[in-house]
Length: 400
Image 1 (cartoon, rainbow, N blue to C red):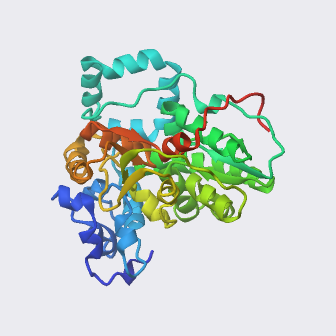
Image 2 (image 1 turned 180 degrees about the vertical axis):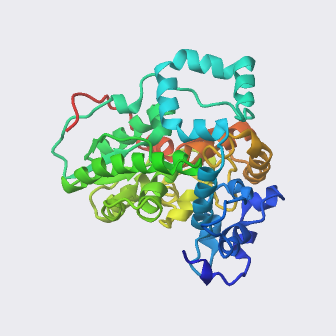
Image 3 (image 1 turned 90 degrees about the horizontal axis):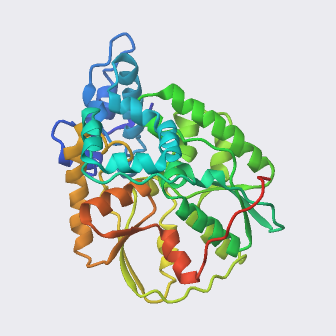
């Protein structure tokens, strides 16, 4: 680890949203490089406060010396989890993929139970926060659909992630329709959870299991000439950064080199002259919340670039605040006050813009900000599709 490169400048501390909201968290410098100097493999991990880190990666982005406090803390979290009993909430969220699959299968009943006061009391008893509404499960998942081959020059394998698959498959279908309108062949490769929920909740073995299965599948598509695209910035960051660095997946380097954010990929097609989209007017004012993991990816804000081409659209970029939810972090009852405090800071900034809706790449961010503000939330693909007049294309036949 590169903790010895830390010069103790405290820039990471200034950019840590959790430290500002929760005085029990000593900050990324102390929890990361400072504490690492004293951690011994011969002694049991006792620094429970490492679990307070939400892994937003803002400390990594801000560090001028290339130190990665978030990775140091994540490894400390993994060790703490192995040496101490995990809470029911940690166990449930680590297995989010299986629970979401079950919830989708029982969608009508699961959605009703989750919305009742009795259901919420059960969740709170298990240590799960209920301050914002749970997303609704969808019985018809994106993974249940397949697409036939076309003769398009460009072809991509879409890693859609758990949120789109189980909760918002309509967004996934819009992504497929949008790319299809650009004469891009889109396939849905066999895939599992990216592994981030398991990684963030102390189950390294399960995270590596998911990563190995995904890597084997995605690697085969790359060998067949496909690029990999993703829409969830957290999934993208996990595949591009955690697979090679934390999980040590053999095919990770090849996958990272051939993986693109959906909007990054569209900009690439435009730069190559492959497509020349004709955006139509959309009269709306939006507040564009930049997810922390999009910033951590280091690819800029490609969705903002595309939305800037839409006539009549006002879109104010807000990249100075974390939403506070950070996947399963804010859904733990123990982190609820911290998540709300961080989220309210972001909402206050959004409300000052006078925007009629919030746009954001991350489903978790949209859940949090929509729940706390009461505003409508949109995926950038929804805005682009409206401007281009894209309608959903029904998928047919078997996978390639």
